[in-house]
Amino acid sequence: MTNQPKDPSATGPDLTGTVLSGRYRIIQKLGAGGMGSVYLAEHTTIRKKLAVKVLSSKYTARPDLVERFLREARATSMISQQNVIEISDFGDTPDGSVFFVMEHLVGEDLRTLLKRDKRVPWPRVRHLIVQVCRALEAAHAAGIVHRDMKPDNCFRITRGDDPDFVKVLDFGIAKVQNVEDDGKGLTKTGMIFGTANYMSPEQAQGNSNDLRVDVYAVGIIMYELLCGRVPFRSKNMAQTLAKHIFNAPKPPRERAPDAEIPAEAEAIVLKALQKDPALRFQTMTEMIAAIEAVGTGAAAVAVVDEDIARPDTSASMSFAGARPPPPTTAPPPSAAVDEPPASLVPLWIGLGGLVVAAGLGAFVAFGGLDEGEGEDDEQELAAAEPSEPPGQSAEAAEAAGVEEAAGVEEVEGVGAEPAVEAGPAPEDEAPEISKILFDTNVSAQVLGAVDRAVYGHTNDEAGVELPWSDRPIALILVAEGYAELEIEVVPNHETKRFAYELARKGGGGKKKGKKKREGNENQLPPQGGDSEVKNPFLNK
Ligand SMILES: Nc1ncnc2c1ncn2[C@@H]1O[C@H](COP(=O)(O)OP(=O)(O)OP(=O)(O)O)[C@@H](O)[C@H]1O
Image (cartoon, rainbow, N blue to C red; front, side, top):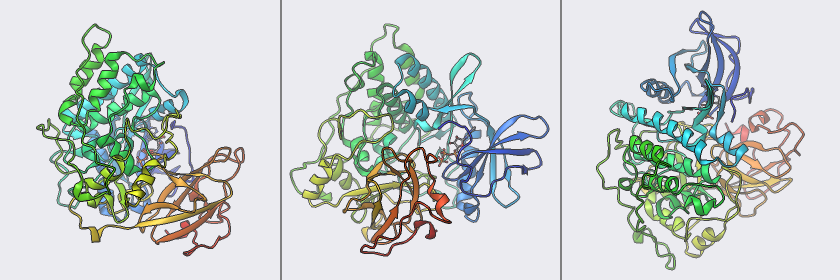
């Protein structure tokens, strides 16, 4: 995403023209995320342009969400480093919401760069990634683990002669050591947070984690920049997470043989992606040193060929037979996190009853079914575009008597959803799967709005499985030649059927489902089916 004004009709009243705290004049909306909107503002006295992030008014009645929103500001402002977005102030809006003020960035995030350039040559990757590492080095020194590093959270701006100056942002689910456990219910053991494509094996299992999750995520970002795609992607989040746990990444130079990736750079990526955190770089300082040493004649960093326990997929799946996770025995470096806090972006994973509650066994059931490097297909897609579902794993899972998993990251309701307990939650407390049947005028992929993970296809008789929820989940319907359609569904019935009409491209670009609340021009008449037919936007 570039930070050009977009989505002017996003959630919440438009504050354009308002003066916040008597000094921040709101000029225009720049965009909207899961928690609220970001505006361009000007300081009325010094006339400096700033960005103001305002919590969506629909969350202001929730003290826990207000707290989480402000935590992003607090955590970020604790880090003083030029590659970290600068937060300068916070306050209340006239309508009772909260906001924080940050430097205004003019540029684009690395997701946008990847979408346009597909992949990035090593010298440029080196320059970008070293800055990302420096930002995280400073965060870690302040006792903060980011935990949600991905290209979307790395902005490139022009500073001086450098068109690739990096700013790291979105510390929304950062862990602030010794500050988080405030007795207000923000900290819960065993929750899983982050974005599946960038999630370390220990995060994926809801285990204790520390700054080395950021090392892993930066390794994935490096891989993606160099190769044009992430090492592990899959039909659904459970499978993706399983691959992080069990599958070895295909080495970058095999993945992109013509990308002229130095062997030493490849070794850095593979070391950052070691399953065992003890085998990764232990600090960002170490990782920076290795990156800077590439091309100097220094030896490549050592990568250990890990003996990754894999499940026996020939037998029927049994959680009891699941092998233990990769060892995470090394003493955690500083900025350790023993208990992940409740997140702005909790990850939901469902399996029949619930994958996460069942623990590792569920991941074994899925990830273990894919042999090799974790390929779903060999098709090289544009960066960040998920592959077509392979079918193989799901079929094998079915054959093994295991229901297919589905995963969803919260978008609209971030933080408002009860996060799934990864460990001790008894199975009878686990949310169930809701099956969504989509009827559309053209077959379309159903993607998660946050990371574009593929959940399935419309017009598929089997439907798309989502974790049961009483709150809306944001999805995007994507079909070639048609404008992407953002929708929200509330998967709180065993089976639900929705009908949409996608508009041909050229007829107004990307549609926002949210706009359809009144006069839903995209929604076809009800199609019938084995459950009630509802406008998902009326479920809010
Ligand atoms: N400091 C900033 N300067 C300029 N534009 C910004 C700044 N921060 C955010 N934006 C713009 O505002 C949009 C919304 O940002 P926000 O952080 O709310 O969303 P997000 O990161 O997409 O979502 P989420 O909060 O769910 O992770 C971004 O896409 C970006 O274009």
